[in-house]
Image 1 (tube, rainbow, N blue to C red):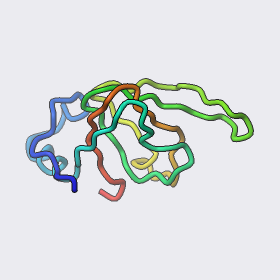
Image 2 (image 1 turned 180 degrees about the horizontal axis):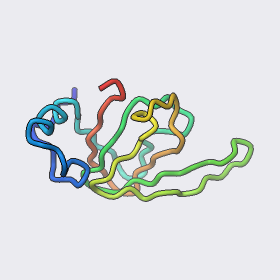
Image 3 (image 1 turned 120 degrees about the horizontal axis):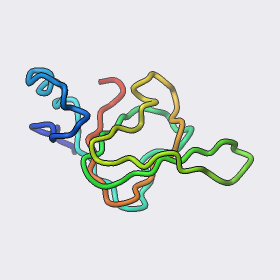
Length: 113
């Protein structure tokens, strides 16, 4: 069971929030840990969560065509950055695969929130 953080970490993603906004937003996030090499989500999977990376590194891979068995690393996500934007943008499926490059601590928020 996940518990919402009592405070948002000092990440650039949250820097422009007023204290009242930060309190409201923090109640929607849950901390989620991932291990190096772990897949967070897969391209084509239902997009239902947006993540903010607190620590570690995450690679985003894009597979341009299902007929070819290769993918391209498009982004290295670093602390303070968000990923899984498909869920926030109302897209039904993730457009990339997210894999932990190093042990990672994230804050996750449901697309419904």
